[in-house]
Length: 335
Image (tube, rainbow, N blue to C red; front, side):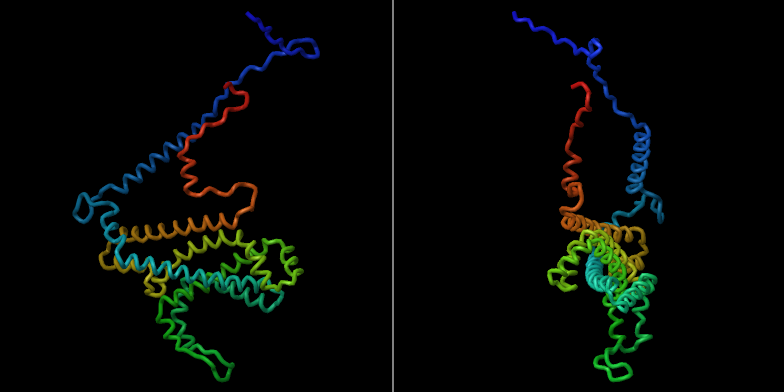
């Protein structure tokens, strides 16, 4: 048998033996308030879910569905509703594209060294941001009252081109696109201007030193770097534009967008709440798709920016939440 001597405890300078510190039993802090708040929240959610499928007496029927899900399911994919959703997407896409392009021009004018261009841009933003979009839509639909004909030519002289304004405003889809585009351009101009200002001025100076013109510097150097600032608010503006299209039917009396299609149906059958739910479900579906697209666009332009890792995608977030991970032990805790 081989005996091994036990290690002797370390000796301090004073000659006394030092003992190892005892292991600490780490107990996590109990958050009683969080558990109470979670319990109350679960009760509220359960009560709300119960109301979704409960029944109430209505129109002589003692067991009528509160939200009338059968009516929602009947009209959810009706062609007039689907067509209204398609028209809503068309108005949103065209208006945002035109608004972004005009906003870039207005932002460039605001940052120009030419005083006249700055004043014109500022006046445009002052007017279109200072008046409600609902009023603007009604104004464009009544443009023929002020300008019966639109013409281009010499002031107080002959005109080279002209058109009847009534032929323009009878196309409600076109009026909606014009009104929403001009209004959106005022907001996009400020968004683009903020993105351009966020880019270091040395980038423009380096491009000009290489012989690039101002337009080339803006398109090739400044705007690509400004996109990481421009994209998030532009995504919010796109979602807002999608919902703003619901004003087209009320302001113009038509246009074929989603809310107008819903309104045309409940004006006939008076089933207002379930048909509004149909419209909300379509709006939620479309805004969800736009939000996902915005996330990936932000992720693309945000590469190499910031100190943290890239944000997780939806699938990665779900996998991480479903995966069980063990918390690493605290320092000093017994193994």
